[in-house]
Length: 483
Ligand SMILES: [Zn+2]
Image 1 (tube, rainbow, N blue to C red):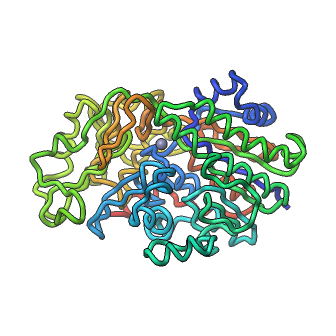
Image 2 (cartoon, rainbow, N blue to C red):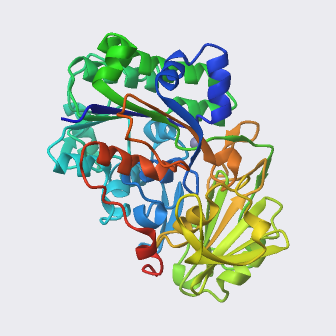
Image 3 (cartoon, rainbow, N blue to C red):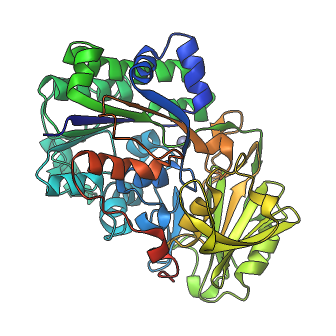
């Protein structure tokens, strides 16, 4: 019987922030886990490095090409509207519109996420294991959960918003969904992560799962607003400490559980804000399904944080190369990329290259590429795992035709004009948004991540641990298969 597994994702916890927190004595549990096991800071996020994309990558083992979740916000070609998952989890819970709640709680998992992707919850529950998730909204599973409190459920039905989700066997999301009464304090007022840690403690006390995904959200939120990030890391660490104590200390905890702690992405400081659609202002731009007819528009721009995507619409009187030329004029643009026949075209400043999966020398992750043009354009020290991640975004059926990764210090305002000037942000292909710490402890010696890990390796790692065949798409089989 395989050891049980706890996976904790601390949103937005970059390696440098973790170092500061450990040095200040405010992340003693993560430090002790790294001491008992291993830590690498070379783990690479997906692209765009935005939370819904990253959580989908962690849960399914797929870049956007496989998960079909391409951004925080994206243009839905079939429905002729923007999908908006909310600029933050808290904002969604606090002031979510009906469409946003439907998009984030139901549509993301059941409609937007590819039916060909397999979540870690689906894979393990199909093998007869019990999975659990705390405060995670990318959570597609086999078990239907109604909004737990009858009064809230009645309200949801009356106003016509989602009243149930399909998730893991044991599912907890704030005060909306709780498959078990845990005695954890209410989440509002005391903080979402403290609430999550208390639920996780309850689950450990009862040994109530084979696989637990604890999502800790507050560090990213604090970083965005330029707030007390060390305090937020301390609260995330305290949530982990509650589980360790419930098991009777670190040794006993690691006797019972294999533990993986990582972040979905990092963050970098924001000094300047750009409007990604500004170079396209003379084109007919799609604004919203209420104000625009896609057949009479050239382009839709979905931008948030440090990534922007431009979608060519059915009536477009322009092409991807021209839109890329225009977007490349933005001071905020660093990498601009688009599909070019069988190739993927990339430009940065005056430099250009194109690449595709091929027969060239294999990279550190075993991918082989054919490359033409300026080979220095995507220095791996600045753009880690760039080819795999750009391919994973550009071949995604729901991504834009042109994708822009922001220059250092720049952020794109979202559709509501929201940005994080003076705080932190993420989303780009660059190292400062993309590298995350990966702490692994309590697993048998033979079980390890690849030497150049990606957050897409978590689902296969957990599946293999339980002897369940990972069901992750082979990238070369996907190339060219989506239009
Ligand atoms: Zn964020």
